[in-house]
Amino acid sequence: MDWHERIVSDPLILVGKPVVKGTRLSVEHVMEQLANGWSENDLLDSYPGLVREDLQACYAYVADTLRDVRVYPIPA
Image (cartoon, rainbow, N blue to C red):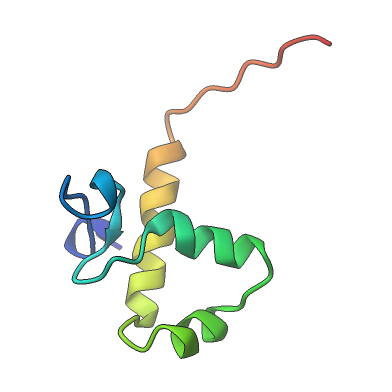
């Protein structure tokens, strides 16, 4: 999935947060709703302009973004 076709970042929309193209629906919001227990169908029903390919693009965007992230535990 090439997320570049569906996820955009524009400083004039949500201060440049990545959003689903043509919406003000941020990738962050989509992922947050899923983390809160929403299903894909819940999202698609709640946001009629959203399609399954948009959700797949959000997943691909997050995967690409996290690919090179390194986490270093800090001892307590």
